[in-house]
Length: 138
Image (tube, rainbow, N blue to C red; front, side):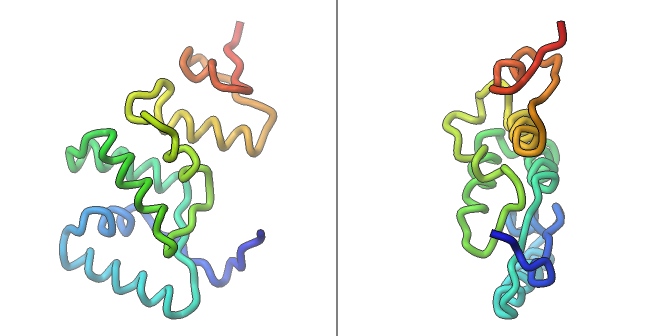
């Protein structure tokens, strides 16, 4: 299904973090209000995998959110009908035990993107090399 680009508004990491964390409160309220306006105008808020990756790391490293909780928050974020993913994040986030998985979330996100766009992925990461279509150089 092709999206009407003029009806879509991409959310940047700063907006996604305000929506997830509710802080700083003033900015979080503005982000929620803007999301409501997007919906009211018949538009769709979209989030790309780069923003998801950046938000994932920011939650952990700047806000001290444990890895699995950050993943859970991101998965719940995409369960909202207001948010549309432009990439592979929702399918990767739905995988069980992702917080302890090797390869981890971002490596799986990269792998999924390459499988969608190319014939495979070349990697030196031994854990990532176990994924379908991944090649470890000899």
